[in-house]
Image (cartoon, rainbow, N blue to C red; front, side):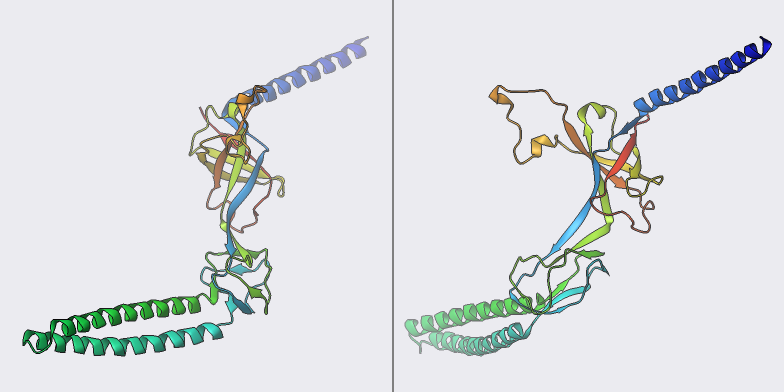
Length: 289
């Protein structure tokens, strides 16, 4: 009988301990529910620079490969410059001709003004000299503009990286003929990424810019990244969708809306740039009311 009482006593103590432990965890959960706001409807996004040519031509060289790390200003793609070099030479020749014609017209204008002042030239001849001067000046200006365009197009034969990042979506090869605006590749700036977290509107009562955020990424279980709330979108996701809901039709059903929140990572949280655009994550905002 005493042995049975001892077992019961042990069970009672275990039960009390379990209830106490459960109470502690429940209390922590309740406290966290007021100071921690989380969602699993979140993903990493960032700046994707789509690279496209401004001029047509044949690809002479592709200097990068898929997933290669590039620096701002690196030459990514080169278009065959021969045709554009010829156009620059042609424009320079036209400018030389127009400049010589203008200089002659300028001398004729000065001579005509002097002779008209001495009443040697008629008014008509004087006006003709002035008109010829204005015409050659305009022609020189137009030729210079064409030269500027030709030189700019020649510069466009080399396509540079607009930012530090990694090459992706590469679809160009040497010998391809390309057109202006055609997508060649993309440069993803992994040093400038952030999270778009779609929180329920009922969760945002105490959320403010600047609050701390703990971030768990599905790819790296057990690792916690840190960040802060940058801003809250000025409307719900549905309001800015391609087909926003029309509630005036009479078939309105109240649905809890989600509002995108922009969360930025701390500068030191991803030193090795292991995070990638599109990764799923679970951010928890610490409101600390």
